[in-house]
Length: 245
Image (cartoon, rainbow, N blue to C red; front, side):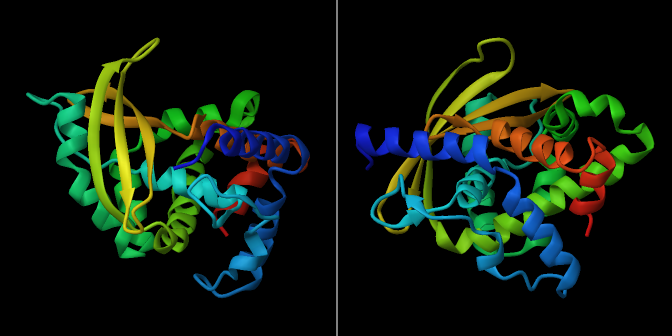
């Protein structure tokens, strides 16, 4: 388990990456995907410099941290009737592990589509640029966002084989929804905590966000997308095109 000093180092490095070049690897990823057969992305094309890992002696990259968080962000579907958020998360833990072990981008995409709070996550990720995105482009943007996350998550999943997910607590959210705390145990014996932000959408629960080692992971997506748009003329359409390559 990481100590306080190592976590402080990770916080500094990740925040520094957000302020310096948080979107550069997305640009490289999109360029490479446009030039390569689908599904043949070279891991070195999308990985920025290494940083010390919060999981032990190995190394972790900014996009890997993002991918690791989205492995957590794919909470699966269930009816919310007669079920608490903690019960929901506990019940779907087996399916979550199956998805992380599958290595299939299509399975990840299916899980995300069915269960993530996609419209809220997607529109928030655009920030003020959301006003400039045509409503007719939103479905394509959502599809691109889901496929982008799914492809990267599927590629990184083998690096973080999950052995067990344990629900440890449930509490009301600061403003809305419910927090469900879990302990993710890896096959290596290492573990980390994930706090899920679960919200009610009609008669179903959806996952709005996930916090890993102190970071709310949609904040990374927000910075990533908004910086990409900013460097491409301030047009969110450029992001839609890039995500759908």
